[in-house]
Length: 120
Image (cartoon, rainbow, N blue to C red; front, side, top):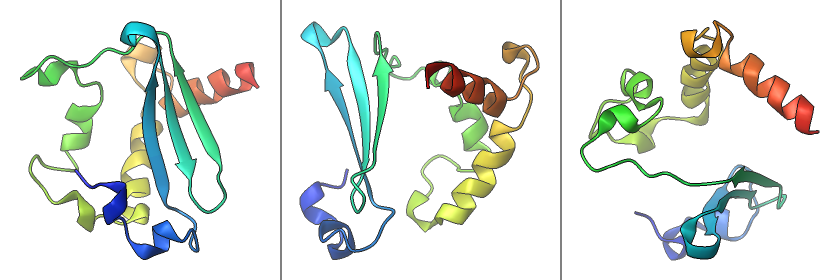
């Protein structure tokens, strides 16, 4: 875990875009939450409203959503700091454009776009 006090100067002084801070704001008794992402330079905010937050049980990898797919690209115990933003995009693009049976053979990018369009 890296603390905010240990972040690089470029993130601290907000001189370069691309540094994000993430947090989870929990509601009463942890029954609701809002996930927050804030880009430091622009102060651009992304909020993820959650009705309930469910955490995976320990030692239960099948509960971790897309982690199985992601582990094909990022092996367990690998140093994830070596991957560039471009390399992460290279991984995310095919995952988001891969039809999924659980989505009625739609692509995650299509489902997400429809969701965002319906809430805009």
